[in-house]
Length: 210
Ligand SMILES: Nc1ncnc2c1ncn2[C@@H]1O[C@H](COP(=O)(O)OP(=O)(O)OP(=O)(O)O)[C@@H](O)[C@H]1O
Ligand SMILES: [Mg+2]
Image (tube, rainbow, N blue to C red; front, top):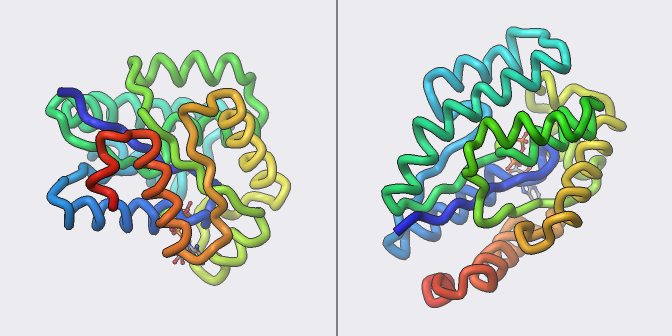
């Protein structure tokens, strides 16, 4: 049986990593061992690309796009596809939709081109659910103020606004795929919404989520 693939998306500081960890911990307590992974990263090659993207390198918008896609292609092949084929549940911190939001909507690369290249990178491995944590940029950036910011996090306010709008545009286009959650509330309240949403989308999992 193919596994379930859930992706967490949202702007910087929206709570993706925290919510993903909460869900993974919850599932482990119920006897499900999800594979937890992230982009960029998730493979040895990907961790190198992550460093280039967020720390050492200064890629042009186009180079940036292809680095993210190289990371994703390797991640799908080495990690995501084998896990799903083996029936594992996969929880991934950022995926396909971040590339459209950041490199497409925010950097301004041609959307059709980004989408086409993105599709080629994932070889059909779209997730079953995208949990989009939505909140105002101001609130999210306030949360991560004081920590050492990476290259993306240092972008201008207006850049993050375009990223947020990019996620919204995708959610509007594929409402059945996206679970949009108000990320401004307390972590535990947000998590209850995540559990509720997963239970509604995957009724077979509902008994596990009570
Ligand atoms: N609902 C919440 N309310 C208040 N603070 C939160 C909430 N969710 C997360 N935080 C805090 O905000 C910060 C950012 O959260 P987190 O690292 O989970 O976000 P992220 O979306 O993974 O960010 P990034 O894109 O930078 O990886 C952390 O310090 C976290 O503890
Ligand atoms: Mg994170």
